[in-house]
Length: 120
Image (tube, rainbow, N blue to C red; front, side, top):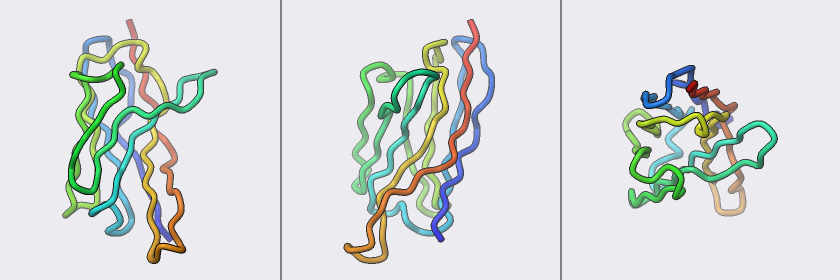
């Protein structure tokens, strides 16, 4: 059973930093795209950052220059370093990956989410 577990959220003042972690129960991140999403109250879930299997990265315009996604395949973990945080970054952050032992068995995996709250 594949599980994704996020951690690292919390309460921080505007301008501060947090590093989120997403740990997988198995070696499923290697060579796969992994994304961080966030969902604020009353809003739809939005894509924040992606790291591809080839380690190419991309970001939502709202976080470019402030957030950085990275991976450590030896730890089956993907990180989201968040700097210069703003109150509008307040949301529950989720990691996501599509994986399966075979092509036919590929499905979406989501973590439980970690709350990030940025105060003014």
